[in-house]
Length: 42
Image (tube, rainbow, N blue to C red):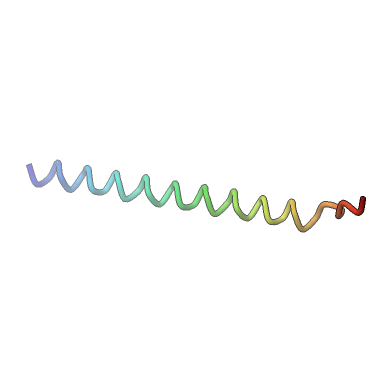
């Protein structure tokens, strides 16, 4: 029982780290897009 609980906890931890990494990557890409596009001077 304890072994299964540890496996589930490990899977949840890895999933949380993956989600955090994907969000950070997405945020950085959005920041670069904003920094490298020409300003709208209308």
